[in-house]
Image (cartoon, rainbow, N blue to C red):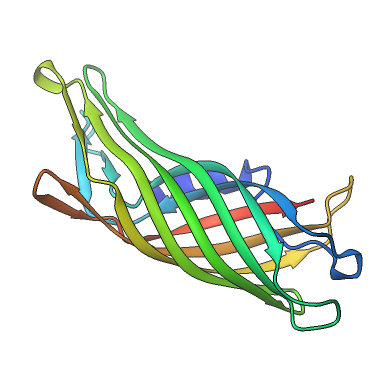
Length: 198
């Protein structure tokens, strides 16, 4: 079920950050960001009448955001960028008489480079306001502490039109834990990404 969700989400994505043509190097580049994450410990699981189940995992969810890339190299040198971004990430499930969701605001700071059409990035991620909420048995809303983690990404770029410099399809890894008042859930997982920068 989660894998199918990931494929559907990625097929509907508009963009995620990519690097612009270095022959037209600017002071900075802006990119829109979308993707779908999966993995981590289960926060909630619903079972349906037909025997199927659906769950919210601590590393899962659809995210949308914006990135800023600042070149750290001189023209003609190996490309090197400071990549910063913020996004909104959420996941939800619902049954006939209940629903649940998990939201957070990831802030990423990474060093990135590219080799031909391949992009590589690694750095820190800080998730603000992780919040789990459901309406089961009167409702529950609990916030985790802001969480610091590690992120790494690899992506392949391909040509784009309509003014977009580059578009990429990638895989992003995040290692992080969420502490809900002493109850810790592992949010480590992967995300499929698709995007562009201008």
